Image 1 (tube, rainbow, N blue to C red):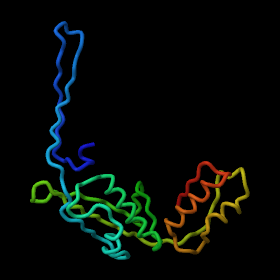
Image 2 (image 1 turned 120 degrees about the horizontal axis):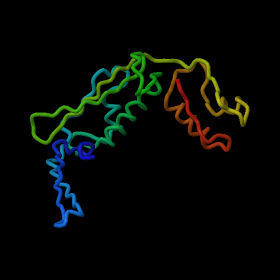
Image 3 (image 1 turned 135 degrees about the vertical axis):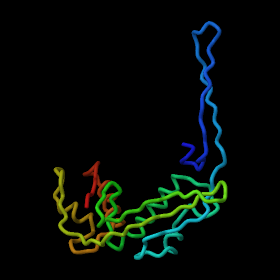
Length: 182
């Protein structure tokens, strides 16, 4: 919890206090948060299809602000969204070098209480949509799903459009669970 909020030096200990008759135990947690780290520099490596200016326009965690892991993850999603129209597939669990990879490194700077963020981007290669296979659909005709997708084979893969299609299908009365796998 503390590291996610930028308290990289936080230490947590405990003190146990027994009652005089040894039947009860009180545990006191001793917490030394240390300083809350701020962002020193934000940099990007490996991006060729999307400019740094485009990333920075959507970022929420910039220089001088307190480090927050939730906002780092949100900014990472914005980077993925920026790559969407260019055909790059992002699968965080995949080790496929042809897919988009984003690794966020935190580098402690010489200035105390500051950390630099480096977004290392491996773009992989752009993809086009091939066949669209509908699986597990027992309540409607497949053409309903294909119509709501609003993408066609041969188009550039766009993760943003496919996310929108997932939401459209989820809000129809026919489907409660929708997932897309490239």
